[in-house]
Length: 62
Image (cartoon, rainbow, N blue to C red; front, side):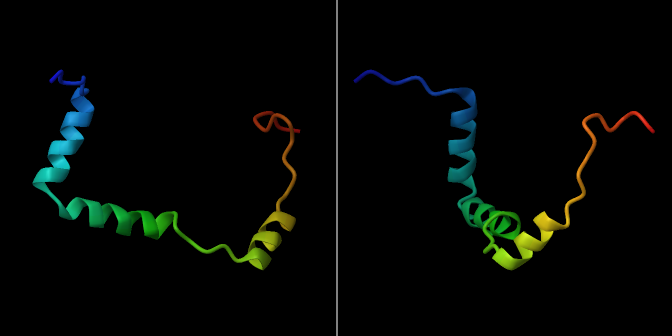
């Protein structure tokens, strides 16, 4: 059987997860902290309405 190509990065990640199976759980927990959130539509609307318009090029003064 022909062995398919596996990049160094893929091999590293596969071996890392094989040696440390708890990493998958830690990865899910960390993702939940920052990304997997329920959005409050009212709060999101208030954020959008309170945004201050920005000039086209902000680095020059008045």
